Image (cartoon, rainbow, N blue to C red; front, side, top):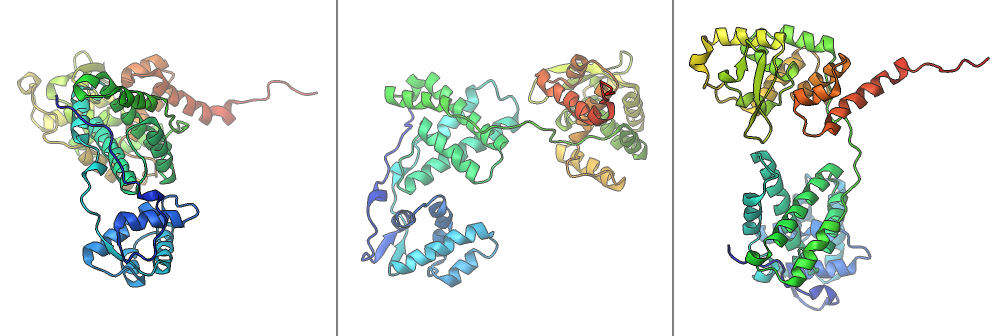
Length: 407
């Protein structure tokens, strides 16, 4: 494995005072001076940078006209920093702006190789979607490092910079959940680099800096019921309204069996065992299949669909996909179509909500939570407990009675 560098030198122009007499300034220089001019720069320089690049690219003068062109579709909180910059720019005598000269040391060398090496070796990310999420999160962090260095700030892969990054993400309005996902990706990458410090070429100081990343705290989150679920009569109405046998079988797998959309796309004819009432499911991000109970309502919907598709006898078609080339976005579209047609569509109700419906109705039916966990294949019992907590909230004012009569 090639050796990777984890730190980079940065331009120290940030400490230089504003020099109004200079008639030519680079993009980074003018942003550094702008930051020094502001009592509390915050994210203003970062917000202004795209506008300046816009002007340089299109050879526009930095003035009210170019600002109005650039900011036409921006919200007010993004326009205010641009106007503040324009005021600053006028007070400095309208210096000519030029692009930054090439400065290789402002990039994080081999960042892509580090990310690819980490993703290749990690065993905690089993699905392509999870790997894509981590790739985007890590690329975003390295872009932040580069931007910070271009602004003349001290920034490298260490605990202090990562902590600052978390605060910046919070100010940018990202949810606590999203911030913590990005932080988790960064922490895991840091741990992987330390573990592979010899082939990576990590110095003792760099290793110590990366160990500090583990101490960075994420944002406090309160886990809530992010998805709505159907009531029993709504579920029944949905199934009865679907005339197409393929769509009815598909929705039954979601709302009766509680399968995830991606699990439905992976099903093969041979995964259905009508005789033993079992369904073999390939879980999210996993290569192994696990059997779950096949409920009669779903079994009947599947039989009708298979007969319409002439998949009988089943053993002869066992290797065929239950739905050829079915994509998750197609499932979401079909479910939304029926929900809207029946006026059941609500803000937090989606195709994945049908899985929540299964869990919620099983709890309401008195099924033991451990069996609900087994059926939905939750790795953590805490996930199953959300259905119990939701039911408790729904029952609270109905079942709570005065325990003591006051005479």
